[in-house]
Every structure is written in C-alpha cells, then in structure tokens.
Amino acid sequence: MDFLRKTKVRRCKRPGCENTFIVAPADPKKFCSQQCAAIMSNTGRIQSTNTRIKISRALVGRKYPERVQANRRKRPPQYRICANPVCRKTFELRFWRPTGNPIKYCSRTCAIRDIGGRPTSPRAARAKAGIRGDVSPTIYFFSRWEANYARLLNHLGVKWIHQPQTFQLRTQKYTPDFYLPESDTYVEVKNYLSDYSKNRDRQFREAYPNLKLVLILKEDYLTLQKQYAPQIKEWEYSNSPTN
Image (cartoon, rainbow, N blue to C red):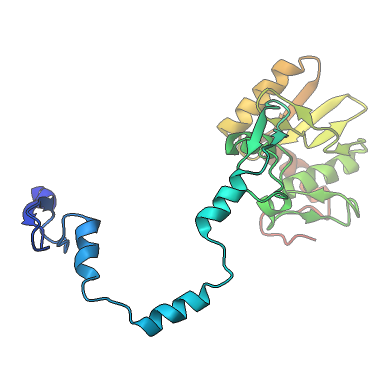
C-alpha cells in the first residue's frame, strides 16, 4: 500500500513566489497558501463604479458586523445555575447567545447525565409504546413487555403502580417500571441489561439498600410468558400490533 503514501514536491504557480510544498500526486493544488491563491484568483477583478454604487446602496442601514459583536460584549454578563441537581454549577451565558435562550445546563455532559437518566420518552420506543385500553385508559407503556407484565399482575390480582417514583442517583436518575405496595417491592422489566443499566442498578442498590428491587430479564419474562400467556387473551407477542 506504499502507493497511497506517495508524495510530490511542487512549486507555487504565483509569479514571484519561490515556495515549494508537498502534496499527493493526484492533488490539484497549485499554490502554496490561500494568500497566493487569492492574489492570482482576484487578478483583473476590478469592480466598476456602477457596481460599487449598487453594493453601497444595498448596504445602507445595515450594522457593521464587528460593531454588532462589540455591542453584545458590552451587555452585562448573565449567570445561571446548572439544572443538573448533582452539578448546580453557576455558569455565564456567552454574549452570542440570545437573551431569552432557554439554556439550563452548563455543559452537554451535564445535560446528558440529567436528561438521559429520566424515564424513557415515547420517541425511544415508538413502535412498541402506547396506551393499552385493556389495562388502563391513561397509562402509557413504553414496551409490550411492560404492558404484558401489568396484564399478568392484574390476572394474579396483585396491586401495582406504574413508574411510581424517580430516584436521584450519584450520576443519573432512575424510575423503576412498577411498584408492588403489598410486598413493598420495585420491579424493573428489562430485555437486555446494558452497561448503563448495570451501573444504574448498582448505584440504586448502593444508595437505597433498604429498598427491594427485582429485575425481570429476558429469561424470566419468557418463563412467565410460557406459563401465563395462554390464560391472558390480550397478551402481546413480538408480532402483535399495539392497541
């Protein structure tokens, strides 16, 4: 693959410039710098008097860009407190930001840590999310597995609450899928336990050691489906349309 690294020495095409530069053989570059290229490209481009008059009339009433930036710099600085409850850092709004810009976080990292830890949005699972009329006319489930687990609890006569509380962890937020008040147990239904979910689960157990959290993973869910799905008429499978 040495042919990919071949180079060639060229001399700048601008008269009077003796500089040389190294390029690939297929590179069409002719000048050593942008300055030399601009000098050669603008040669003979002399605007007529009529053209200059038209340009000046078109610019009448417009503010000079540098003056606009200077006026913005003169504005008194504005400060805000980061909306991430873990950070709460005071940061300054830059002068190029509009006054009414709804910036809430000091950095993208803080925004991702705070927003990314909230309950799953409907857009994250649009194909499987929705309200199941046979379960509840108001609860929005984010997956078929959540809806089926709610159907199973109803079938067994177990009281449950969907997404009852959001817990603030060390670096993120966590909202369990279900809470069973009779057994004082939180339940999380997960198809796949990613590193992010493992870290969240570990932080929850460290921060709230007295709370009971049960994970229902794929193997557990399939076992429950095999046992109870034939008894529940509205049970949804992977190819079932959402209600």
